[in-house]
Length: 264
Image 1 (tube, helix red, strand yellow):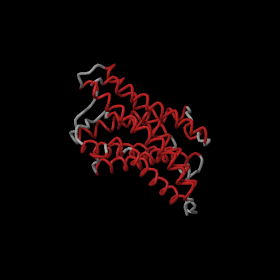
Image 2: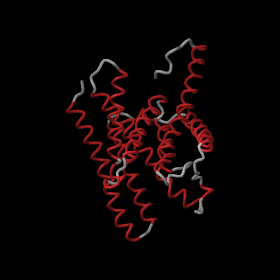
Image 3: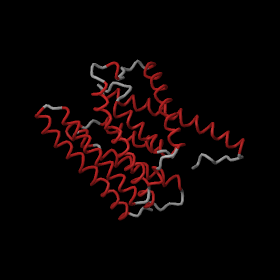
Image 4: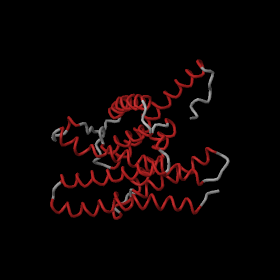
């Protein structure tokens, strides 16, 4: 059913990379915290995330997966529409649920500081989505021997999301792991897989990842806000993507007579 040795090898390689980087980051931050210099911490975060992104790009090339992350005009246009609709629908929903905003004009910090503090999440989103949603997903998919394609995909998504959660445990801090945070990350892994597999646009998953990590809309001062924000991201994204697919379905059916176009 699953090629055990090959799957174990893939898992060990990916986890060795991720689990090695984050404890290094945590260890460095312990010493940086002593100096109480937030700028140094941000610089370290940038370095670690850029290294992770470089490793992910190297592995994409090594496994001939660059086609999965290729940018095109269509990809960029889809991403722009998704961003605009995501922000619009999210703002509507956070008002409905009376959630606190984290928009930059509600803070006392300068725009330059906020951009510098949050821009490295671009590297986080790209690096982690490349690594987990493309490299690890397709490698695991190749090790599963089943005739049912959908079942293979489901198993690969679950395993990938589990590894995604395990890789984030050092960030949660082993002493302070909360079950809700862990489940939230696992759910986010499945949701990111949905975004990528449904759109075939990895940058849609990466930008959703970026918005969630930066808390660009919602205040994350309490864990429940973080969990609720994940649900809001899921709701808004599903609405956007499924409406888009329905419109494409009827357009293609009318123009080309195709009914299975959305099974890319």
